[in-house]
Length: 186
Image (cartoon, rainbow, N blue to C red; front, side, top):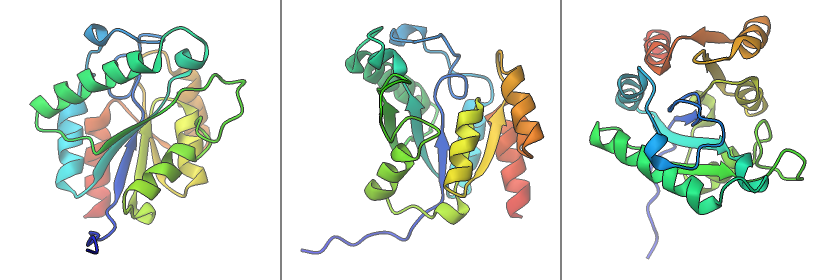
């Protein structure tokens, strides 16, 4: 039997820490995961515009030995449950477990996680976007030809300066990004 594939859909690639949830520096305890303001509203708006939501997150605490891959997965499961309770569906969660000094193709800004998502899903990259809180998220967007947006929560002044100097939009939260994207489409 041949599996019928849906048409390619645009995707919103999302960073996790500092973008969806408060950045807790090497978060391994699911109970400490807290959604940031504007996340639910923004993600619902993006879903309503036809975007598939996929999280791609560097989790170097695994490679550094601070916590296990199972710990990172537990945090993702908790965040996923919080979002689903609010009507937000994340299609997939991808993590890079490597420390910065380990050779890999998945650590942002390298494209490995997006490439893997493209193997797993039919994604229209030409209409997809990347939302993150660091310059590596925007550098990844550039590598794959995506529109990139920076959310400026927490201590991101250096990232904000980098984003502005490189022509990227800087927004207070995901809801503001979603409003901008919606206005840009129509």
